[in-house]
Image (cartoon, rainbow, N blue to C red; front, side, top):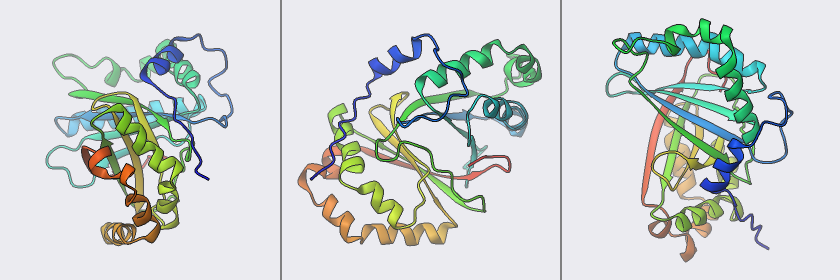
Length: 263
């Protein structure tokens, strides 16, 4: 029998939840329900901007987040950038309430504001970055919590599937949750870090996930195995899950973690 999860998250309910008063401490234990992730992408003009942003995350933001119950903060550079690298930051939260509480704490912490002045209060004539693109994602039911891989040299692939309609996007998520596509990734050794539906952010409707490899050769081998896997062929052959119906665009970004990244 199929496991029907019926993902219920919507932009309206997500926004409503974020404005409710924070009722528990930021250090609340991880719940059984799905986590939320903030995915930030910094556009940087030069090495100086990168130093300022990375210094803020390494020395100020990550320690503060850890103290507030946020674990496994990931910070990544592009594997082979065309120009100045973009910086990707992945921040997991136990719940929307946790997200709200952490945000309020950052805004009211005068010591943190002072320490992070070079980043937070950079002059308009010399900004710390060009722009931040930020998305809020809800973890999939079948992988409700982030799974940090073993701490060793590796590369990461961040993939986004855009859909033409919200119904198509929900159907693609159902394919991962209820038909066992996530299980195929895990069985074949992709070591996924997270799967998330974008509830607030650009290019909606879309889903985003992160997988890992030892190197580019391993990446090629894993995707080859995936394409020929009997279970994947069975799932993808179902007419209701045809990519032509559910996916309008796929983007793939190869990343490498910074030395201080917790993922």
